[in-house]
Length: 421
Image (cartoon, rainbow, N blue to C red; front, side, top):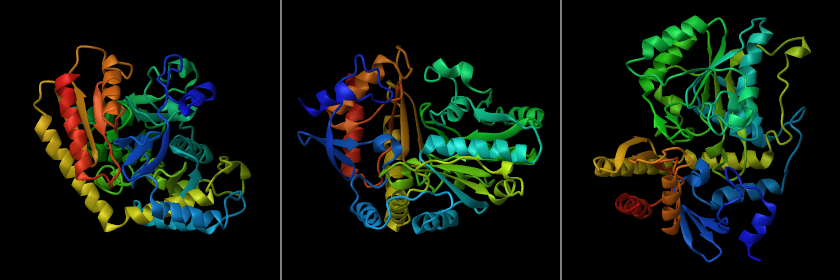
């Protein structure tokens, strides 16, 4: 019995209808932008394994730092104890985040980082004796799959079974020149009830790499600040260079009150999440009344090995060569978008930083469950490229180490698919 057959007997895979799922591809090793199966076939990981791998697979420097940490301390409870990897990582991150971020709260993944942010903001008002319990979010948002994160995400087929259990959220359109003033008015009308506004800055990833302009987000954030609505920037996806700057919030002038991180945080090495906040948020929990404590934690909070992986990833991220690679990928994507934008099968192209998305023209279903999506996915797999179209939207989100030759190969296969699929 091969590994795929053994897997199907005992494993339940994410986002997968297991009744008719194709056998999973056994991956045995990785190197740079490539993953290799049991037969040593190379797959270019053009989506960074769900957007987490920013430096390439099996990076020797990260592996070295993880191995060193495993010889010292693998884990310790983080309530009443601390350790150097967690303190060092917090100190280093706060130096490159917006200047108002002063505290780091560790968790396990992007969804839990969002849960922490929501609880911080709701309890902030509770601790101050004000009943602000409503949350503002964008339509089509995606913030994770735990219940709080689902609640502030757009309602869809993915949440349908739980909709009656999710708390009410006020959803608004993405801002643009036509609606920005109306959105401000909507916020002003709700301000006495709003605890916070949570948003994916510049790019809504899971909804189809939907992109919007920084200047309108800046205006919306400024208005929320004026109306005393707390700001949560969900940078789980956009953080660590994806938008062309270190963080997507570096594109705006208004600083968020709370920020969420995961995915690229450890370079894709292991699970970790963290939430940062401004000093005044933290101060609202300081009290002789112990009921004003933030009652949240995880067994693996601030795991030393994960902190060491994150520090190693940060070392690589801050190297000049990484930003050079980000600029190179941006330029290559831009050139490719210009080349195909007038193709009759392309409805639109959009690009922010190292993210490029192409919306396929189709007469069939454009949802995540469309047959076009499946045909494209299998076509690229057969060509040795891992791309997971979001319905009729094909996107490329590669590790920063991807070569020009690998990008050219991906582009050529997309052009061929435009003619044949």
